Length: 302
Image (cartoon, rainbow, N blue to C red; front, top):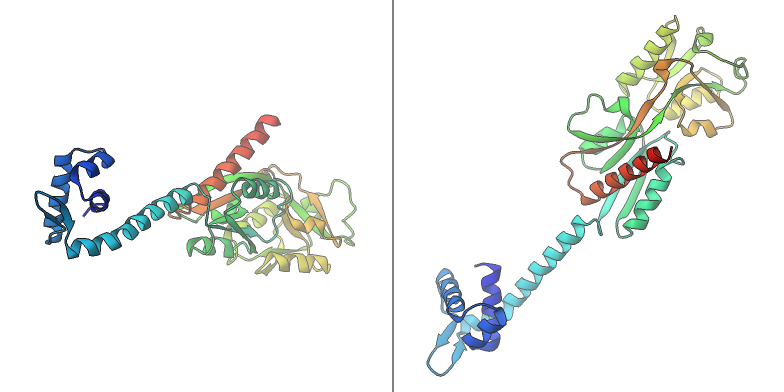
């Protein structure tokens, strides 16, 4: 039984006249008669009693007439909801943001613009560590993540957009003897202990720091930690130095200073917006499209 047949049946039950019902449905009377006959055959029961003078509903037809309009309305409501969902007018978007990423430049405006364009989409924002973000993307707890590019190198089935670039920087305690030195180079920190996420948290990031120091002629003494919060804690207390990002919230901490690294390998890394390719939340496409539009506008204006 198709939804068209249900529609035909309801209209005929209202009119109890094939000619009038066919005119209202914009089909021919023979076509309507055939559809009702097919419907009765499929159901295995008569719905109408036909005689020369009038058309009447059978008891079974009366039962269906009382219930099928609700079925048809539920169907139309479901279709409307599907259209609305695909337009991103309802639902939620769960976004995970790297715990040290400074959203104030670009991303905060992106969030505001998205909420303005799609006020019915509920945004859920939370910060997570570098290692947690991909895990929560794969298990479906998050729809989108914002993280460093190197943390996604070994993660299959993800779609990504580069939203910002960043440079690697040196982070020192403000009271460190080298904190005020002009033209500070990474090689000046040869004898220091570098506080760094261990390979369990970020294999690529861990090797990157080792290779960056090697290019300056030394192998760093490393203190491995599990979270970026712990990196900041050790540097803030004067127990090590670290490599961090030029787009890190650590720059706002009054107890540390951030200095650039004058090496080509330390420049122009990327921060990605990423999502799993099998996540069909329609708000993901709306958000990523808006991000690409804003990026293109920035590039054309620069």
